[in-house]
Length: 586
Ligand code: ADP
Ligand code: MG
Image (cartoon, rainbow, N blue to C red):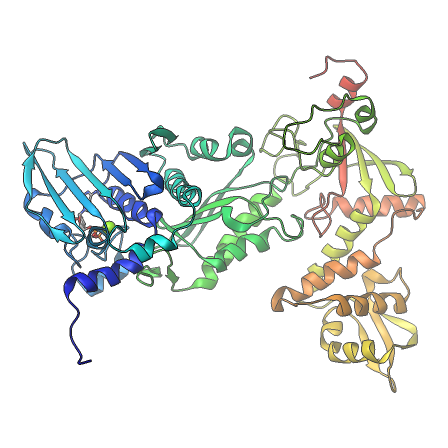
Protein backbone atom coordinates (compact mmCIF):
# COMPACT_ATOMS: atom_id res chain seq x y z
CA UNK A 1 0.00 0.00 0.00
CA UNK A 2 1.32 3.46 -0.78
CA UNK A 3 1.84 5.90 2.09
CA UNK A 4 -1.13 8.24 2.56
CA UNK A 5 -2.14 10.86 5.06
CA UNK A 6 -5.13 9.48 6.98
CA UNK A 7 -8.48 11.17 6.42
CA UNK A 8 -9.34 13.55 9.26
CA UNK A 9 -12.16 11.40 10.56
CA UNK A 10 -9.86 8.40 10.95
CA UNK A 11 -7.16 10.47 12.59
CA UNK A 12 -9.72 11.85 15.06
CA UNK A 13 -10.92 8.40 15.97
CA UNK A 14 -7.38 7.24 16.59
CA UNK A 15 -6.73 10.25 18.79
CA UNK A 16 -10.06 9.71 20.52
CA UNK A 17 -8.93 6.22 21.49
CA UNK A 18 -6.32 7.74 23.78
CA UNK A 19 -8.49 10.39 25.36
CA UNK A 20 -11.85 8.64 25.55
CA UNK A 21 -11.36 5.15 26.78
CA UNK A 22 -14.64 4.72 28.62
CA UNK A 23 -17.66 6.72 29.78
CA UNK A 24 -15.79 7.91 32.88
CA UNK A 25 -13.15 9.51 30.66
CA UNK A 26 -15.85 11.59 28.96
CA UNK A 27 -17.13 12.70 32.35
CA UNK A 28 -13.59 13.60 33.41
CA UNK A 29 -12.90 15.77 30.36
CA UNK A 30 -16.23 17.57 30.57
CA UNK A 31 -15.91 18.12 34.32
CA UNK A 32 -12.47 19.58 33.81
CA UNK A 33 -13.80 21.93 31.15
CA UNK A 34 -16.53 23.12 33.51
CA UNK A 35 -14.02 23.69 36.31
CA UNK A 36 -11.70 25.54 33.94
CA UNK A 37 -14.68 27.80 33.08
CA UNK A 38 -14.96 28.62 36.83
CA UNK A 39 -18.35 26.99 37.24
CA UNK A 40 -19.94 27.27 40.71
CA UNK A 41 -22.45 24.49 40.07
CA UNK A 42 -22.08 21.42 37.90
CA UNK A 43 -24.82 18.92 37.17
CA UNK A 44 -24.05 15.54 35.67
CA UNK A 45 -26.65 13.17 34.28
CA UNK A 46 -25.79 9.66 33.25
CA UNK A 47 -28.02 7.03 31.66
CA UNK A 48 -27.21 3.39 30.95
CA UNK A 49 -23.78 3.70 32.55
CA UNK A 50 -22.95 6.59 30.23
CA UNK A 51 -23.51 4.72 27.00
CA UNK A 52 -26.96 6.18 26.40
CA UNK A 53 -26.28 9.64 27.78
CA UNK A 54 -23.77 11.77 29.58
CA UNK A 55 -24.87 15.33 30.08
CA UNK A 56 -22.92 17.95 31.97
CA UNK A 57 -24.26 21.43 32.58
CA UNK A 58 -22.32 24.20 34.22
CA UNK A 59 -22.87 27.85 35.04
CA UNK A 60 -19.37 28.83 33.97
CA UNK A 61 -18.13 31.48 31.59
CA UNK A 62 -19.54 29.90 28.45
CA UNK A 63 -18.21 29.85 24.89
CA UNK A 64 -18.74 32.85 22.58
CA UNK A 65 -21.28 31.90 19.88
CA UNK A 66 -18.84 32.63 17.08
CA UNK A 67 -16.27 30.22 18.60
CA UNK A 68 -18.63 27.32 19.07
CA UNK A 69 -17.67 25.53 15.85
CA UNK A 70 -14.02 26.02 16.58
CA UNK A 71 -14.30 24.50 20.06
CA UNK A 72 -15.01 21.05 18.61
CA UNK A 73 -12.10 21.19 16.15
CA UNK A 74 -8.99 19.19 16.94
CA UNK A 75 -6.18 21.05 18.71
CA UNK A 76 -8.44 24.03 19.34
CA UNK A 77 -8.10 25.54 22.79
CA UNK A 78 -8.41 28.86 24.55
CA UNK A 79 -5.98 27.76 27.26
CA UNK A 80 -2.60 27.67 25.59
CA UNK A 81 -0.73 29.98 23.21
CA UNK A 82 2.79 28.65 22.92
CA UNK A 83 4.84 25.58 23.71
CA UNK A 84 6.62 27.60 26.36
CA UNK A 85 3.37 27.91 28.31
CA UNK A 86 3.21 24.13 28.68
CA UNK A 87 5.34 24.60 31.78
CA UNK A 88 3.16 27.18 33.42
CA UNK A 89 -0.24 25.55 33.02
CA UNK A 90 -2.85 26.49 35.57
CA UNK A 91 -5.90 25.06 33.79
CA UNK A 92 -6.91 21.41 33.76
CA UNK A 93 -7.23 21.33 29.96
CA UNK A 94 -4.66 22.54 27.43
CA UNK A 95 -4.54 19.94 24.65
CA UNK A 96 -7.64 21.12 22.81
CA UNK A 97 -8.56 17.53 22.06
CA UNK A 98 -11.40 16.53 24.34
CA UNK A 99 -14.45 17.97 22.61
CA UNK A 100 -13.17 16.90 19.17
CA UNK A 101 -12.41 13.39 20.39
CA UNK A 102 -15.71 12.91 22.18
CA UNK A 103 -17.62 14.33 19.21
CA UNK A 104 -15.96 11.88 16.85
CA UNK A 105 -17.24 8.83 18.76
CA UNK A 106 -20.73 9.97 19.79
CA UNK A 107 -23.61 12.32 18.97
CA UNK A 108 -22.66 15.50 20.77
CA UNK A 109 -24.80 18.56 21.35
CA UNK A 110 -23.04 21.63 22.68
CA UNK A 111 -25.08 24.55 23.97
CA UNK A 112 -23.37 27.56 25.43
CA UNK A 113 -24.22 31.09 26.43
CA UNK A 114 -22.17 33.88 27.95
CA UNK A 115 -23.11 36.44 30.55
CA UNK A 116 -24.17 39.76 29.07
CA UNK A 117 -25.26 38.34 25.71
CA UNK A 118 -28.92 37.89 24.99
CA UNK A 119 -28.73 34.54 23.27
CA UNK A 120 -26.82 31.33 23.27
CA UNK A 121 -25.84 28.98 20.46
CA UNK A 122 -26.20 25.28 19.88
CA UNK A 123 -24.16 22.96 17.75
CA UNK A 124 -24.66 19.29 16.92
CA UNK A 125 -21.78 17.02 15.94
CA UNK A 126 -22.69 13.50 14.86
CA UNK A 127 -19.81 11.04 14.75
CA UNK A 128 -17.44 13.85 13.87
CA UNK A 129 -19.71 15.54 11.27
CA UNK A 130 -20.11 19.13 12.46
CA UNK A 131 -23.50 20.76 11.86
CA UNK A 132 -24.39 24.45 11.61
CA UNK A 133 -24.63 26.42 14.88
CA UNK A 134 -28.08 27.84 15.63
CA UNK A 135 -29.21 30.56 18.00
CA UNK A 136 -31.19 29.41 21.03
CA UNK A 137 -32.31 30.87 24.31
CA UNK A 138 -30.25 29.49 27.20
CA UNK A 139 -28.87 30.72 30.52
CA UNK A 140 -25.21 31.52 31.06
CA UNK A 141 -23.04 28.44 31.02
CA UNK A 142 -22.44 25.37 28.97
CA UNK A 143 -24.29 22.11 28.51
CA UNK A 144 -22.63 19.23 26.75
CA UNK A 145 -24.86 16.32 25.84
CA UNK A 146 -23.10 13.16 24.74
CA UNK A 147 -25.44 10.52 23.35
CA UNK A 148 -24.78 7.01 22.11
CA UNK A 149 -21.11 6.95 23.03
CA UNK A 150 -19.06 4.67 20.76
CA UNK A 151 -22.07 4.00 18.48
CA UNK A 152 -19.73 4.25 15.49
CA UNK A 153 -16.85 2.27 17.04
CA UNK A 154 -18.55 -0.95 18.13
CA UNK A 155 -15.17 -2.50 18.92
CA UNK A 156 -14.81 -0.02 21.79
CA UNK A 157 -18.14 -1.03 23.25
CA UNK A 158 -16.89 -4.58 23.59
CA UNK A 159 -14.07 -3.40 25.82
CA UNK A 160 -16.37 -1.78 28.35
CA UNK A 161 -16.84 -3.50 31.67
CA UNK A 162 -20.22 -4.25 33.24
CA UNK A 163 -22.62 -1.34 33.64
CA UNK A 164 -22.10 -1.48 37.39
CA UNK A 165 -18.35 -1.12 36.99
CA UNK A 166 -18.58 1.74 34.51
CA UNK A 167 -21.13 3.52 36.71
CA UNK A 168 -18.87 2.99 39.71
CA UNK A 169 -15.98 4.62 37.87
CA UNK A 170 -18.11 7.65 37.10
CA UNK A 171 -19.31 7.99 40.67
CA UNK A 172 -15.78 7.64 42.01
CA UNK A 173 -14.50 10.26 39.66
CA UNK A 174 -17.19 12.80 40.42
CA UNK A 175 -16.88 12.22 44.18
CA UNK A 176 -13.16 12.77 44.12
CA UNK A 177 -13.50 16.01 42.23
CA UNK A 178 -16.22 17.00 44.67
CA UNK A 179 -13.76 16.62 47.58
CA UNK A 180 -11.11 18.51 45.66
CA UNK A 181 -13.44 21.41 44.83
CA UNK A 182 -15.57 21.87 47.96
CA UNK A 183 -16.68 25.33 46.82
CA UNK A 184 -18.41 23.95 43.75
CA UNK A 185 -21.86 22.45 43.98
CA UNK A 186 -21.85 18.99 42.37
CA UNK A 187 -24.93 17.00 41.50
CA UNK A 188 -24.75 13.58 39.96
CA UNK A 189 -27.86 11.81 38.70
CA UNK A 190 -27.61 8.23 37.57
CA UNK A 191 -30.61 6.97 35.62
CA UNK A 192 -32.62 9.79 37.17
CA UNK A 193 -31.65 9.05 40.79
CA UNK A 194 -29.57 11.55 42.73
CA UNK A 195 -26.32 9.73 43.49
CA UNK A 196 -24.28 12.57 44.95
CA UNK A 197 -25.02 16.15 45.94
CA UNK A 198 -22.67 18.56 47.58
CA UNK A 199 -23.49 21.91 49.10
CA UNK A 200 -20.54 24.05 47.96
CA UNK A 201 -20.08 24.88 51.64
CA UNK A 202 -16.31 24.78 51.26
CA UNK A 203 -15.83 22.03 53.85
CA UNK A 204 -13.95 19.02 52.52
CA UNK A 205 -14.75 16.90 55.54
CA UNK A 206 -18.42 17.36 54.82
CA UNK A 207 -17.91 16.03 51.29
CA UNK A 208 -15.91 13.12 52.69
CA UNK A 209 -18.87 12.29 54.90
CA UNK A 210 -21.03 12.03 51.80
CA UNK A 211 -18.55 9.54 50.36
CA UNK A 212 -17.37 7.41 53.24
CA UNK A 213 -20.04 8.02 55.85
CA UNK A 214 -19.95 10.28 58.88
CA UNK A 215 -18.08 7.77 61.06
CA UNK A 216 -15.08 7.48 58.84
CA UNK A 217 -15.14 11.13 57.80
CA UNK A 218 -14.97 12.34 61.40
CA UNK A 219 -12.11 9.99 62.18
CA UNK A 220 -9.97 10.95 59.19
CA UNK A 221 -6.90 12.88 60.26
CA UNK A 222 -6.29 16.21 58.65
CA UNK A 223 -2.89 16.54 57.01
CA UNK A 224 -1.13 19.86 56.59
CA UNK A 225 2.48 20.31 55.62
CA UNK A 226 4.29 23.21 54.00
CA UNK A 227 7.86 22.78 52.97
CA UNK A 228 9.40 25.57 50.94
CA UNK A 229 7.22 25.71 47.85
CA UNK A 230 5.43 22.37 48.30
CA UNK A 231 2.16 22.15 50.18
CA UNK A 232 0.56 18.87 51.12
CA UNK A 233 -2.94 18.93 52.54
CA UNK A 234 -5.82 16.52 52.83
CA UNK A 235 -7.03 13.64 54.93
CA UNK A 236 -5.77 10.25 55.88
CA UNK A 237 -7.31 7.45 57.90
CA UNK A 238 -6.35 6.54 61.46
CA UNK A 239 -4.73 3.17 62.00
CA UNK A 240 -8.09 1.77 63.07
CA UNK A 241 -9.50 2.12 59.55
CA UNK A 242 -8.11 0.32 56.56
CA UNK A 243 -8.96 -1.17 53.20
CA UNK A 244 -7.87 -4.34 51.49
CA UNK A 245 -6.58 -2.48 48.43
CA UNK A 246 -4.91 0.81 47.58
CA UNK A 247 -7.73 2.25 45.51
CA UNK A 248 -8.62 4.80 48.15
CA UNK A 249 -5.22 6.43 48.06
CA UNK A 250 -5.91 9.46 45.90
CA UNK A 251 -3.83 12.40 44.74
CA UNK A 252 -4.62 15.77 43.31
CA UNK A 253 -1.66 17.72 42.02
CA UNK A 254 -2.38 21.41 41.47
CA UNK A 255 -6.09 20.60 41.36
CA UNK A 256 -5.71 17.75 38.91
CA UNK A 257 -6.51 14.14 39.81
CA UNK A 258 -3.49 12.02 38.98
CA UNK A 259 -2.48 8.43 39.36
CA UNK A 260 1.00 8.03 40.76
CA UNK A 261 2.17 4.65 42.05
CA UNK A 262 5.32 6.18 43.56
CA UNK A 263 3.31 8.60 45.67
CA UNK A 264 0.98 5.78 46.72
CA UNK A 265 3.93 3.86 48.00
CA UNK A 266 5.10 6.95 49.88
CA UNK A 267 1.79 6.89 51.73
CA UNK A 268 1.90 3.16 52.32
CA UNK A 269 5.43 3.37 53.64
CA UNK A 270 4.37 6.06 56.07
CA UNK A 271 1.94 3.53 57.55
CA UNK A 272 4.55 0.78 57.71
CA UNK A 273 4.42 -1.01 61.05
CA UNK A 274 1.15 0.73 61.90
CA UNK A 275 -1.17 -1.20 59.60
CA UNK A 276 -1.24 -4.93 59.23
CA UNK A 277 0.35 -6.38 56.14
CA UNK A 278 -2.02 -6.26 53.17
CA UNK A 279 -4.11 -3.42 54.63
CA UNK A 280 -4.09 0.06 53.10
CA UNK A 281 -5.26 3.45 54.34
CA UNK A 282 -7.89 5.74 52.92
CA UNK A 283 -6.05 8.87 51.94
CA UNK A 284 -6.83 11.85 49.78
CA UNK A 285 -4.02 14.34 49.36
CA UNK A 286 -3.84 17.69 47.63
CA UNK A 287 -0.33 18.53 46.58
CA UNK A 288 0.33 22.05 45.39
CA UNK A 289 3.58 23.24 43.95
CA UNK A 290 4.73 25.82 41.39
CA UNK A 291 3.53 25.02 37.86
CA UNK A 292 7.06 24.87 36.51
CA UNK A 293 7.84 22.00 38.90
CA UNK A 294 5.33 19.67 37.23
CA UNK A 295 5.12 18.42 33.67
CA UNK A 296 1.43 17.76 32.99
CA UNK A 297 1.91 16.88 29.35
CA UNK A 298 2.94 13.25 29.67
CA UNK A 299 -0.33 11.44 29.08
CA UNK A 300 -3.17 12.09 26.59
CA UNK A 301 -5.74 11.68 29.34
CA UNK A 302 -3.62 13.93 31.60
CA UNK A 303 -3.91 11.41 34.39
CA UNK A 304 -0.18 11.25 35.05
CA UNK A 305 2.31 13.97 35.77
CA UNK A 306 6.06 14.11 36.05
CA UNK A 307 7.73 16.06 38.85
CA UNK A 308 10.92 17.95 38.27
CA UNK A 309 12.11 16.74 41.67
CA UNK A 310 10.12 13.64 42.46
CA UNK A 311 12.19 12.68 45.50
CA UNK A 312 11.32 15.90 47.20
CA UNK A 313 7.59 15.41 46.59
CA UNK A 314 7.84 11.81 47.74
CA UNK A 315 9.55 12.80 50.98
CA UNK A 316 7.11 15.61 51.69
CA UNK A 317 4.14 13.28 51.26
CA UNK A 318 5.66 10.66 53.48
CA UNK A 319 6.56 13.17 56.14
CA UNK A 320 3.14 14.79 56.05
CA UNK A 321 1.38 11.48 56.65
CA UNK A 322 3.80 10.25 59.23
CA UNK A 323 3.46 13.41 61.29
CA UNK A 324 -0.29 13.32 61.12
CA UNK A 325 -0.29 9.72 62.28
CA UNK A 326 2.18 10.03 65.09
CA UNK A 327 0.28 12.90 66.57
CA UNK A 328 -2.91 10.90 66.61
CA UNK A 329 -2.48 7.16 66.99
CA UNK A 330 -5.14 6.07 69.46
CA UNK A 331 -4.96 3.30 72.00
CA UNK A 332 -7.68 0.82 71.09
CA UNK A 333 -10.30 1.18 73.74
CA UNK A 334 -12.49 -1.64 74.85
CA UNK A 335 -16.16 -0.80 74.61
CA UNK A 336 -17.25 -4.10 76.02
CA UNK A 337 -15.39 -6.26 78.50
CA UNK A 338 -14.55 -9.77 77.34
CA UNK A 339 -16.75 -11.51 79.90
CA UNK A 340 -19.70 -9.40 78.90
CA UNK A 341 -19.67 -11.08 75.52
CA UNK A 342 -20.43 -14.41 77.19
CA UNK A 343 -23.72 -13.04 78.43
CA UNK A 344 -24.54 -10.95 75.40
CA UNK A 345 -27.45 -12.29 73.42
CA UNK A 346 -26.47 -13.59 70.04
CA UNK A 347 -26.78 -10.90 67.36
CA UNK A 348 -29.58 -11.67 64.90
CA UNK A 349 -28.36 -13.45 61.79
CA UNK A 350 -28.51 -11.26 58.70
CA UNK A 351 -29.86 -12.95 55.60
CA UNK A 352 -27.08 -13.92 53.25
CA UNK A 353 -24.37 -13.44 55.85
CA UNK A 354 -22.82 -16.02 58.11
CA UNK A 355 -24.01 -15.65 61.72
CA UNK A 356 -21.73 -13.43 63.77
CA UNK A 357 -19.72 -15.22 66.37
CA UNK A 358 -19.76 -12.98 69.45
CA UNK A 359 -16.25 -13.93 70.50
CA UNK A 360 -15.05 -13.00 67.05
CA UNK A 361 -16.57 -9.56 67.06
CA UNK A 362 -15.19 -9.08 70.51
CA UNK A 363 -11.75 -9.94 69.22
CA UNK A 364 -12.27 -7.32 66.57
CA UNK A 365 -13.00 -4.79 69.31
CA UNK A 366 -9.86 -5.77 71.07
CA UNK A 367 -7.61 -5.38 68.10
CA UNK A 368 -9.09 -2.01 67.43
CA UNK A 369 -10.94 -2.71 64.20
CA UNK A 370 -14.08 -1.28 65.69
CA UNK A 371 -12.82 1.84 67.29
CA UNK A 372 -15.68 3.83 68.75
CA UNK A 373 -16.53 6.84 66.63
CA UNK A 374 -14.42 9.76 67.59
CA UNK A 375 -11.73 7.77 69.35
CA UNK A 376 -9.31 8.55 66.58
CA UNK A 377 -10.24 12.15 66.07
CA UNK A 378 -7.96 14.68 67.61
CA UNK A 379 -9.48 15.94 70.81
CA UNK A 380 -12.11 13.19 70.92
CA UNK A 381 -13.55 13.02 74.42
CA UNK A 382 -12.13 9.56 75.07
CA UNK A 383 -8.71 10.39 73.70
CA UNK A 384 -5.83 10.34 76.09
CA UNK A 385 -5.08 13.86 77.12
CA UNK A 386 -1.46 14.64 76.52
CA UNK A 387 0.16 17.68 78.05
CA UNK A 388 0.44 20.27 75.31
CA UNK A 389 3.76 20.30 73.50
CA UNK A 390 4.90 16.96 74.88
CA UNK A 391 6.27 14.33 72.54
CA UNK A 392 4.89 11.57 74.68
CA UNK A 393 2.52 9.27 72.82
CA UNK A 394 1.09 7.54 75.89
CA UNK A 395 0.56 8.87 79.40
CA UNK A 396 2.93 7.97 82.20
CA UNK A 397 1.85 4.60 83.51
CA UNK A 398 2.17 3.10 86.99
CA UNK A 399 3.05 -0.57 86.87
CA UNK A 400 0.76 -2.85 88.84
CA UNK A 401 2.13 -6.20 87.82
CA UNK A 402 2.09 -9.09 85.41
CA UNK A 403 -0.80 -11.44 84.72
CA UNK A 404 -0.67 -14.85 83.11
CA UNK A 405 3.06 -14.32 82.52
CA UNK A 406 1.90 -12.55 79.36
CA UNK A 407 0.44 -9.14 80.10
CA UNK A 408 1.51 -6.19 82.13
CA UNK A 409 -1.14 -4.31 84.02
CA UNK A 410 -0.67 -0.60 84.53
CA UNK A 411 -2.63 2.37 85.67
CA UNK A 412 -2.76 5.68 83.83
CA UNK A 413 -4.49 8.97 84.64
CA UNK A 414 -7.53 7.78 82.72
CA UNK A 415 -7.94 4.14 83.59
CA UNK A 416 -6.35 0.77 83.29
CA UNK A 417 -3.94 -0.44 80.60
CA UNK A 418 -3.30 -4.03 79.64
CA UNK A 419 -0.03 -4.38 77.79
CA UNK A 420 1.00 -7.33 75.69
CA UNK A 421 4.58 -7.89 76.79
CA UNK A 422 5.65 -9.54 73.56
CA UNK A 423 4.19 -6.89 71.28
CA UNK A 424 5.50 -4.14 73.53
CA UNK A 425 9.00 -5.54 73.66
CA UNK A 426 8.95 -6.02 69.90
CA UNK A 427 8.15 -2.33 69.47
CA UNK A 428 10.85 -1.29 71.91
CA UNK A 429 13.55 -3.39 70.25
CA UNK A 430 12.45 -2.28 66.82
CA UNK A 431 12.64 1.40 67.57
CA UNK A 432 15.98 1.06 69.31
CA UNK A 433 17.42 -0.85 66.41
CA UNK A 434 16.02 1.26 63.58
CA UNK A 435 17.08 4.45 65.29
CA UNK A 436 20.65 3.20 65.04
CA UNK A 437 20.53 1.72 61.54
CA UNK A 438 22.15 3.98 58.99
CA UNK A 439 24.36 5.63 61.59
CA UNK A 440 26.11 2.91 63.51
CA UNK A 441 24.42 0.23 65.48
CA UNK A 442 25.85 -0.07 68.96
CA UNK A 443 27.28 -3.51 69.33
CA UNK A 444 28.58 -5.38 72.29
CA UNK A 445 31.80 -7.37 71.96
CA UNK A 446 31.63 -10.86 73.39
CA UNK A 447 34.09 -11.69 76.13
CA UNK A 448 34.64 -15.06 74.54
CA UNK A 449 33.92 -15.13 70.80
CA UNK A 450 31.43 -17.85 70.01
CA UNK A 451 32.01 -20.26 67.16
CA UNK A 452 28.82 -21.59 65.58
CA UNK A 453 28.31 -24.18 62.86
CA UNK A 454 25.47 -23.88 60.39
CA UNK A 455 24.10 -26.24 57.78
CA UNK A 456 25.69 -25.48 54.37
CA UNK A 457 22.66 -23.71 52.96
CA UNK A 458 22.36 -21.36 55.91
CA UNK A 459 26.10 -20.84 55.94
CA UNK A 460 25.96 -19.64 52.34
CA UNK A 461 23.23 -17.21 53.22
CA UNK A 462 25.20 -15.78 56.10
CA UNK A 463 28.28 -15.40 53.97
CA UNK A 464 26.34 -13.56 51.32
CA UNK A 465 24.66 -11.27 53.84
CA UNK A 466 27.70 -10.41 55.96
CA UNK A 467 27.47 -6.69 55.00
CA UNK A 468 23.87 -6.50 56.18
CA UNK A 469 24.77 -8.30 59.37
CA UNK A 470 27.43 -5.74 60.05
CA UNK A 471 25.05 -2.86 59.35
CA UNK A 472 22.76 -4.40 61.96
CA UNK A 473 25.57 -4.45 64.53
CA UNK A 474 26.77 -8.03 64.22
CA UNK A 475 30.45 -8.71 63.89
CA UNK A 476 30.72 -12.13 62.36
CA UNK A 477 33.54 -13.77 60.43
CA UNK A 478 33.95 -16.94 58.48
CA UNK A 479 35.74 -19.55 60.59
CA UNK A 480 36.41 -22.60 58.48
CA UNK A 481 33.87 -24.52 56.42
CA UNK A 482 30.30 -23.61 57.36
CA UNK A 483 31.40 -22.15 60.67
CA UNK A 484 31.35 -18.56 61.85
CA UNK A 485 32.92 -16.76 64.72
CA UNK A 486 30.68 -14.21 66.40
CA UNK A 487 32.74 -11.38 67.86
CA UNK A 488 29.99 -8.93 68.70
CA UNK A 489 26.19 -8.63 68.56
CA UNK A 490 23.90 -5.59 68.68
CA UNK A 491 23.79 -4.36 72.27
CA UNK A 492 20.02 -4.36 72.35
CA UNK A 493 20.04 -8.13 71.88
CA UNK A 494 22.47 -8.91 74.68
CA UNK A 495 19.72 -10.50 76.73
CA UNK A 496 19.72 -13.34 74.18
CA UNK A 497 22.72 -15.54 73.61
CA UNK A 498 24.90 -14.56 70.65
CA UNK A 499 24.01 -17.78 68.94
CA UNK A 500 20.28 -17.23 69.29
CA UNK A 501 20.57 -13.72 68.00
CA UNK A 502 22.46 -14.83 64.90
CA UNK A 503 20.16 -17.78 64.42
CA UNK A 504 17.15 -15.43 64.47
CA UNK A 505 18.66 -13.41 61.65
CA UNK A 506 19.51 -16.48 59.62
CA UNK A 507 16.03 -17.90 60.07
CA UNK A 508 14.77 -14.67 58.72
CA UNK A 509 17.09 -14.65 55.71
CA UNK A 510 15.73 -18.06 54.88
CA UNK A 511 12.14 -16.97 54.97
CA UNK A 512 12.45 -13.69 53.16
CA UNK A 513 11.20 -13.61 49.60
CA UNK A 514 11.64 -10.21 48.06
CA UNK A 515 13.84 -7.71 49.80
CA UNK A 516 12.92 -4.07 49.11
CA UNK A 517 16.31 -2.40 48.92
CA UNK A 518 16.25 0.66 51.13
CA UNK A 519 13.44 -0.56 53.33
CA UNK A 520 15.04 -3.96 53.56
CA UNK A 521 16.96 -3.31 56.72
CA UNK A 522 13.91 -1.96 58.49
CA UNK A 523 11.78 -4.90 57.53
CA UNK A 524 14.52 -7.25 58.53
CA UNK A 525 14.84 -5.39 61.82
CA UNK A 526 11.10 -5.74 62.45
CA UNK A 527 11.22 -9.47 61.95
CA UNK A 528 14.34 -10.05 63.98
CA UNK A 529 12.89 -8.05 66.84
CA UNK A 530 9.83 -10.25 66.71
CA UNK A 531 11.95 -13.35 67.01
CA UNK A 532 14.03 -11.99 69.85
CA UNK A 533 11.36 -10.18 71.86
CA UNK A 534 10.21 -11.56 75.19
CA UNK A 535 7.51 -14.11 74.55
CA UNK A 536 4.07 -14.39 76.07
CA UNK A 537 4.16 -16.90 78.91
CA UNK A 538 7.56 -15.74 80.13
CA UNK A 539 7.50 -14.44 83.66
CA UNK A 540 9.40 -11.23 84.26
CA UNK A 541 10.95 -9.81 87.38
CA UNK A 542 9.52 -6.58 88.74
CA UNK A 543 12.59 -4.74 87.40
CA UNK A 544 12.15 -6.23 83.94
CA UNK A 545 8.48 -5.26 83.91
CA UNK A 546 9.26 -1.71 84.95
CA UNK A 547 12.04 -1.39 82.39
CA UNK A 548 9.79 -2.63 79.61
CA UNK A 549 7.05 -0.18 80.52
CA UNK A 550 9.49 2.68 80.72
CA UNK A 551 11.04 1.78 77.34
CA UNK A 552 7.61 1.59 75.80
CA UNK A 553 6.70 5.03 77.10
CA UNK A 554 9.76 6.35 75.31
CA UNK A 555 8.74 4.92 71.93
CA UNK A 556 7.67 7.04 69.03
CA UNK A 557 4.75 4.73 68.15
CA UNK A 558 4.16 2.85 71.39
CA UNK A 559 0.65 1.73 70.54
CA UNK A 560 1.38 -0.88 67.93
CA UNK A 561 4.03 -3.52 67.37
CA UNK A 562 6.08 -3.15 64.18
CA UNK A 563 3.64 -5.47 62.45
CA UNK A 564 0.67 -3.31 63.27
CA UNK A 565 -0.91 -5.20 66.14
CA UNK A 566 -1.81 -3.21 69.24
CA UNK A 567 0.58 -3.34 72.18
CA UNK A 568 -2.02 -2.22 74.68
CA UNK A 569 -5.68 -2.09 75.49
CA UNK A 570 -7.19 0.70 77.47
CA UNK A 571 -10.04 0.24 79.93
CA UNK A 572 -11.10 3.77 80.63
CA UNK A 573 -12.39 4.96 83.99
CA UNK A 574 -15.59 5.75 82.19
CA UNK A 575 -15.96 2.20 80.91
CA UNK A 576 -15.23 0.70 84.32
CA UNK A 577 -17.81 2.90 85.96
CA UNK A 578 -20.43 1.89 83.45
CA UNK A 579 -19.60 -1.78 83.77
CA UNK A 580 -19.92 -1.61 87.56
CA UNK A 581 -23.21 0.22 87.27
CA UNK A 582 -21.85 3.38 88.82
CA UNK A 583 -23.07 5.23 85.75
CA UNK A 584 -25.83 4.60 83.24
CA UNK A 585 -24.69 2.32 80.41
CA UNK A 586 -24.40 3.89 76.96
P1 ADP B 1 -9.10 22.06 26.26
O1 ADP B 1 -9.91 21.93 27.48
O2 ADP B 1 -7.88 21.24 26.32
O3 ADP B 1 -8.83 23.47 25.89
P2 ADP B 1 -11.41 20.97 24.95
O4 ADP B 1 -11.56 20.25 23.65
O5 ADP B 1 -11.80 20.26 26.16
O6 ADP B 1 -9.90 21.44 25.04
O7 ADP B 1 -12.21 22.32 24.85
C1 ADP B 1 -11.94 23.23 23.81
C2 ADP B 1 -12.27 24.64 24.22
O8 ADP B 1 -13.68 24.80 24.35
C3 ADP B 1 -11.72 25.05 25.55
O9 ADP B 1 -10.40 25.55 25.43
C4 ADP B 1 -12.70 26.12 26.01
O10 ADP B 1 -12.37 27.37 25.47
C5 ADP B 1 -13.99 25.68 25.39
N1 ADP B 1 -14.86 24.97 26.36
C6 ADP B 1 -15.05 23.64 26.42
N2 ADP B 1 -15.91 23.33 27.40
C7 ADP B 1 -16.26 24.48 28.00
C8 ADP B 1 -17.12 24.83 29.10
N3 ADP B 1 -17.79 23.91 29.80
N4 ADP B 1 -17.24 26.15 29.41
C9 ADP B 1 -16.56 27.09 28.74
N5 ADP B 1 -15.74 26.81 27.70
C10 ADP B 1 -15.59 25.54 27.31
MG1 MG C 1 -10.80 20.18 28.08
